[in-house]
Figure 1 (cartoon, helix red, strand yellow):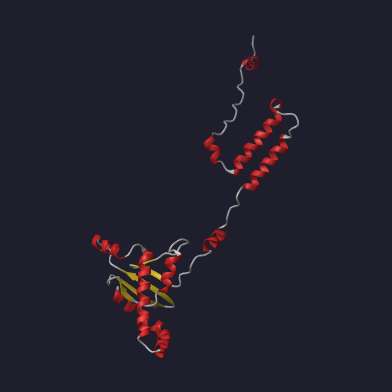
Figure 2 (cartoon, helix red, strand yellow):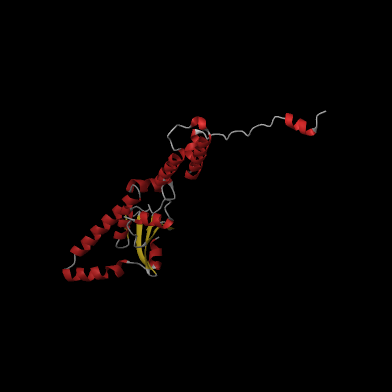
Length: 218
């Protein structure tokens, strides 16, 4: 008569299933830490299985060398401060706040472009440009200089007219700055040297508008 122990001995205990090997797609997406773990497991398995060993090869040393090489080629994570400092290199600095049709122009690492920032910094006074379609207001608001750029763009016809007058924000600014340079040159040439010098000193106050005056142009 078989005892309970005898029945247990007759039962075949399945061996643990081998760990599934990662696919090629998974290998391309694993982290350095996961890759290191796979290397360690492979080295450990090779050291235990004498059938795969080759005489004269130090598998443990080879695994450590491979892991060291992997660590040396892994890129160090860049901190937020380092990223910000890198992105600021070569960037032009906008010296005044800018509003386009009432919305603030957000300054990021890539927008406005250096060309657009340089043109915005060259605007010297208020006026109306591109066949009277675009109003430019340069005003003092507290301790800040503020530029308001306003034009109609609510309808398809208005947007089509705008597109016929300028192609992109940089082209709009370039045409405004070119027109202002011509205006400044005409005023300077029409006045004697003493008056021109006084005007250059006083241009800041004579061309900038108060918030109330700026509102009347929008």
